[in-house]
Structures are given as structure tokens and as C-alpha cells.
Length: 134
Image (tube, rainbow, N blue to C red; front, side, top):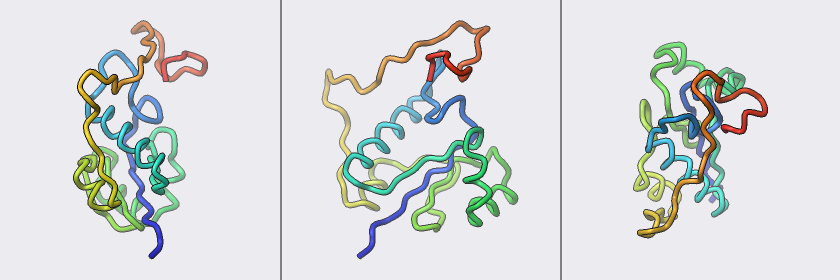
């Protein structure tokens, strides 16, 4: 049996994970951690950000058609082997576990699940090269 190819197509985010800036969506933190955990287990999983990976949105016919029909505000979407599995949301841990056969658990109590991120002043662009934000 061949390995699944999981692709997550994010809306336009400030940086590759969206985990930057003064107020971070906890769902972005969770999906970034889940993707990292699955990647470390050898799962073929990638994320593409509409603001930074435009070509990825145009070379995949499923994603391009979705973008043309629904617009950029309909993301994120998840494809498994080029089949649409989730739209307008990130997959849950349960879904990722079911698709991959790998159990993803919550971080232990007291365990730090979030990496400390430098937050720049409001008047500085988060994704400016060398800003250190992302």
C-alpha cells in the first residue's frame, strides 16, 4: 500500500504557519503542531499558504478549481491524494489519526506546546525579511 499524500491549503497568512503576530489563533497553533508531529512520524504532509505559495494553488487542478469556484475566503482545504477531504476548516486530530493510523494526543499537562515567538511593534510588518517574527 502506498503512503498517503496529505496537503493543506491555507488562506493567505502572515507567515508559513500563521503562528505569528500579537494574537495567534489557537487552531493555527494546533494544526502546526499536528503537522509537525505527523511529519516526524514520516507522513507525507505539506501546508501551502496562499500568500506565499501561489504556484501550489495554480498547479493542482483540484485546488485551482476550488479557488475559482469559491474564492480565497473559502480556505483552508485539505486534500488526500488529490481528493478534497475538508473545506473551510482544518482537520481535527481524530481525522488526522484516522487517515494516517497515527494517534495524535494532547500535550501533557504542564508541557509547553507553544514556541515563544518574538512580536514586533504594530507599525512593523510581521513578515518583513529579517524581522524575526516568523
